[in-house]
Length: 400
Image (tube, rainbow, N blue to C red; front, side, top):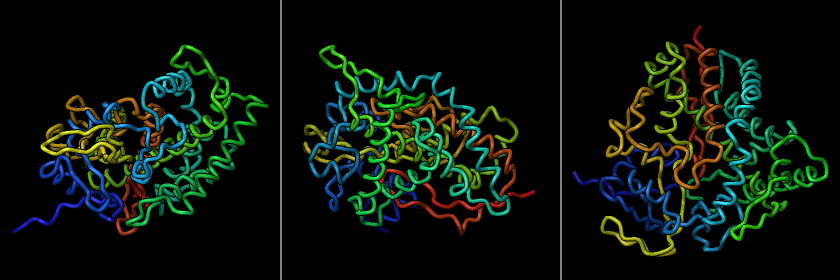
């Protein structure tokens, strides 16, 4: 029997629904995959993705992080996610001072209160884990930290979703997505100007006050556009990652009930469960870069100036890196390979510690709320988004 043609399409129903079989074929048959339809290359093996995410001199972020941006060839506005060193190094150093472990830990009570707020209002007979919990609470956490008024939080979430949503075959951001991006940026820009006039104890004020050390040793303040752009990025990443991670949990554990029982028996395994959820089904499946020079890999030459998908979601299930990678096991040996669920290299997720804390608290609370539950599999619905993979609806019934 002849195999079907190997096709990886990140804008297809197959991708939105989980491209694990395609990833495995790419690793085996086309470790350097070329898409004729979209004119991009893709790497899926753990070794290649890890090296690619670290090698900014070959794989540049300066042209954007999605296919439409990189393909355009135009450099996007200055933002940390669109920077290569040395600019990136200075911006990251500044932001690391704002996102200290102590600053993250100080948010624990607020995070717990946000989760409790939504779980206490949930109906155990018909509980949609995404719509009733994992969708609304993370955006409230990050917007509260930024200093956004609570009444704007859910609007911000809907703008984020709109900007990431793609119909099958849609590469460019749509008109509604463009408007959502503008609305988000305008909201944050307004807040920056307010904080300059009236400082408060929030992230916006810290960013207004912060000083960036330049390559020549001089220091400067961030301008309003830089702060608004960073807030847009942080708000999106901070909300989406946890929404998808916590939303994945009841699905993955529903298919692996013995793993849920391990958590019920021993809550100390929760941090390990968060790491395994990240590995098993990373919320952010790929990062797009632009080749700075010709790259020769596995007998294939990737020409300079091409979009390259570094698929960390595939790397996290590479059998060359992990034992039995398609098995969900919260007790797995995590030292086997680098988990790239939060990226890797200079652009690894800035808010990873916050996302881990939020996810761990949410899992702990879900164990209390629904120690026994049934998933309404027919009611589960995936999102259709670029870069991120996860669920829009996960209805469950708590078994009493």
